[in-house]
Image 1: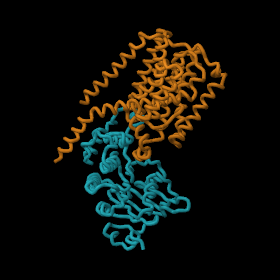
Image 2: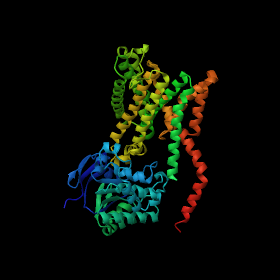
Image 3: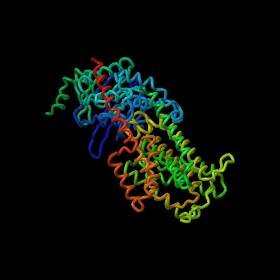
Image 4: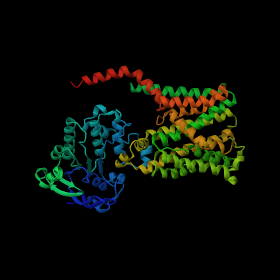
Length: 247
Length: 329
């Protein structure tokens, strides 16, 4: 079976510094893969190379067998690859509902139909379902900027799922989220994974969160993969422990 | 509650419209001219509000598009072509040039973009002044005829005022439709977070160019209305001052508030007239009013109105919050 995402020899250098050094891995459909590593190990750079925000110096990315290296983020998103950001990225002046409609409207119809068609692009119901799914129903008509940090994180994730993506890359979804909101987020992500077979790649610092969410982990240090395997194995891996604790 | 607010808003708009229809009846021609000028400038400010207020792309060239529209109409109608030809060509020209002016915005933002559009504004002024074969340079073009609609002449200032008013109403409806469509939502997304918009499949490049093209087109339409209003055009009204004035209208009214430009144009067009009694002091008083407004209310007049409305509604809102906090127990 063709993996949903193949990363082959992705390399990115900034001047003389190799941020990502020839990284290869695969993600199978329906899998939750975690990418961990100490600060500066190249996780975010790798993400940005996969998502078209940075052009890799070398290497190739394939989505369902088709090359997608260097495609514009908007194009990639319409092919079914969605993402969340490390720092909050919602549209504060739009309501929660409008944020979600925006996240879906560009995936259907044409520019013309978006000009002359209905104001909600026919997405009101889908947006409300997604809002209810992420337990934000009571906030649907509030401006997104008025939500708490944790609620905005949930909204951010909801937006990433709005267009029914095949693959979602989550960049530190747990960062700065309080424990009760965190378990809500984990539980929602699991539910989407089980119910819709959605595939995730998660960058995370919160070990407890990533170990309990992911089926498989890839560990980066200094731009290279140093370990790969199920959470239990990674927990005991000598190289991983060394990379985190220093020598 | 929501239906009640909708009805109130509709009544308010209707009342303003009735006032605008009745307003010129007791006025001298100069008063009617000022009202017409307000309608025309509001059309241009509406356009800038789309580019700047909604899509967040600063432009110091909106006055140039008014100039392009005005010159196009003046040149065509004084050479015997009908008004609609001037209108049509202005729309096409301003859309195309506005689109091209959008390209720098794909590379630079904020004050850098302001300087790029400033350069364009200067370029346009030089063309208006120096290309005498086309624009008659500083001598200008006189005798711009006023059109007639279905055999009904618009030569009188009152008739032409109503023509401008109809133009404003149509432009308002078009802008209202645009802002409430998914395009409007994409424009706001572009302003608030282009990176996130891009990652949600929004073609930010296309929407940026569209925001410039559409905003500029409304500027051109304002110019098309302006030329027959004043009947004589020369380069001086379309210098940088007009672009700055239009920017002032959008910001003073409350950028990204739909009705901001109407109030802003009121301030920019009417306030100097009302302040005439102060004689030589009027510019000083005018500037002081604008400075004070910007210091105490950076969100503009509509922002001020909203703030007053909110604080009046606050006790009730607080009570609402309390009841909400209690329900989950």
